[in-house]
Image (cartoon, rainbow, N blue to C red):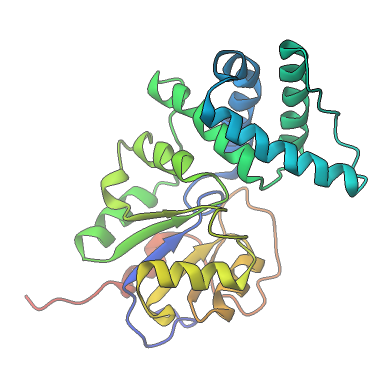
Length: 256
């Protein structure tokens, strides 16, 4: 095993997306740009739907908090309809510019991306080692989950529409910010509970040290993903990997 892992057997692998399975540039330059270009058209068509209204209600709550904290967000307007839509577009773009991990924003982005994936405009990029690793881990009996700030819908769309094909059959569970912050210890306790697994039998791989430290504090095993295009970080106690090929030795051994 990789030196930072314990002797406990790995049963579940939990993966971050951005900077771990997928280049950061794809998320920021392709997905975010697509959402930004399509958000007004989407809101114009779906503004009165219950799902969109729920997302916008969450965004309005977040906007109120931003105002109270004097972050100076663009104002939200209650009426008329077109002006209200324009004000939400301005606020959404402001959140995108800050890379805010907003549940309402991520839920709305997932719905916008759905159209792009379904019509073929979007194809998710993965690092070359990811698809073979997912298939190998799945066939070896390991359970694979995703924990990302993107909504569960966005996660499912991404793995269902990759340049390597539909990989969703290899993913067992999806966790997003409704589970909690990715830097909160309790989020990883919740994941372990949802997976019905001892924390020591779970391996979490991410490109963010603060997330890994939180998972480690919850008893989960961790590895730091260092990929091309990722910002440099001080790894601290985290063991570095550059590809999933480096952890092939966590695979269960079967008698032949």
